Image 1: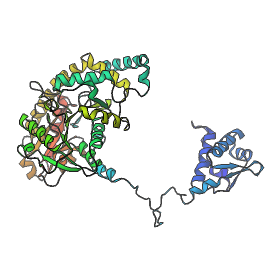
Image 2: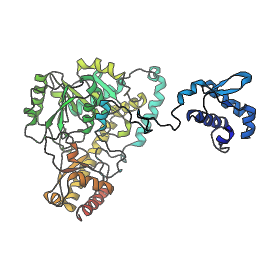
Image 3: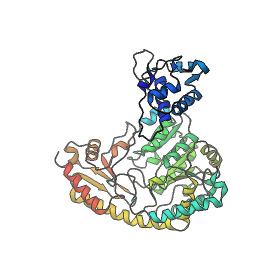
Image 4: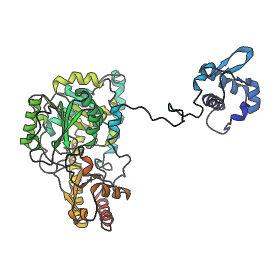
Length: 495
C-alpha cells in the first residue's frame, strides 16, 4: 500500500503534524491494515509524499518505535513490529463472540453490578421544576462561600501536612463543627473522633454496607424507601427484608427470625412519605436491634428543615448500647454539588471504618472541608438553615394551596412539618380516569414537570403500592410553583 495515500493531515488544526502522522500510522497498524513485517517508506520519502519536513516524519517514527509499533533495523529500514500481530483479528475494532459471527460481545459484569444496575436513578432532571431532593440554589450565599474557599486555599500553605494524605477521614476542624451542629440541632451524643467525612451520602451507604454485610447476610430497610440504599444493599447481595410502613406500629412487628445485621431507617422524616417515627417506635426499634445484635443506620438527610417548634431529637441520641450509625449530608442543607456528607460511627466501629475508608477513595478535598468548617464555626451555616426553613415552609404552603386550587379533584396533598418535598396522593377521580402514578409521572415529566411516582419506592412484590406523586418544592419560587401546578392541572384533566 502507498502509505501516504492513507494519511490525511489537517495543516490548520491544533494537533502537531508529527502527532497526526504518528496517530494515523498507529491506527493503520491497530486496524490490521499495516501487517507485521511490512516495511515503511523512509522518513525522507514519506516526508516528500506528505509534503512535510523530514523531522516531522522522523519524530512520528521514533515515537512508534519507542512504543513498540515499529522496529528500526538500520539499513534495512523501518518495519511494522512482530508485536503488532496481537492486533490480528481485530481489524474492525469489534470484539467477537466465540461463534465467530462478529457480533459485539456483552461485557462480563459482576453479579453485584447487575443488581445495582436494576435500580434506575434518573439523570439530568429538569431544573427548578419540582425535582425531588433539590434545595434552593439561587439563595445560596455564593459570595460568602467564595470568600471561605479563597481563605481556605490561602491557609493551606500554613499547614503543610494538608497537601498530602493527612486527615483522610476528616479535617479535625470540620469534625468538631459537625459534632457541635449535630449535638445542638439533633441531640447527637458523640465525640469528633467518631466523625468520618465522605464525598456523598451514597458513598457513606456503600461504605457501611460493605463494612457490615457479607453476601447473603440479612438486612432491613423501609418500604417504601430510598432507592439509593436499595442499590447499596443489592450491591453487596444482602438478603433484604422490608419494614412495611403502611402497617400500624411496624417496628413492633419486626420478625425475630430475620436477625438483620443492618437496619436502615429515616426516622425523623421518612423518605418518601414524610412519616415521623414516634418515641414508642424508636424505643421498639432500639430494643429489636439489641435483641438481634444489629446496627441501625439512621439517615438524617433533611431534618434541619423543621417548620414547627424544634426538630425531634435523633435516634442516635436515644441509643445507649452504641448500635446507631448516624448519617448526615450537606447536599440538602447547602447544595448537592459540594459533595460532602458524614457518618458518626459507634466507638467500636471507628477504627474499622477508618481503615476501610482509606481504601475506598471517597474523601472530599481538604480545602473544601476547611471552608465548610469555617462556614459552620462562624454561624453562617445555622443562619442559612434558618433562612431556608422559612422559605421552604412558604413554598410548601404555596404548593399545597396551588394543588388545592387547581388539582382538587386529581391530587390530594399531604402537608408535612418540614422537608423540601411534598407527597400528593392520586384521588379516586384520577384513578377512574385511567391514570396510575407511574404513567402520570412519566406523562408529566415528558412535558417538563419533574416528579417521582410513590409506587417506584416500593421494592418488594408483596406490599400493595399506594399511588401518589412526589414533588420537590424547594428550588421553585411561588410564581414558578403556581405556574407549574396550573400547567399540570391542564395536562391531567383532558385525558
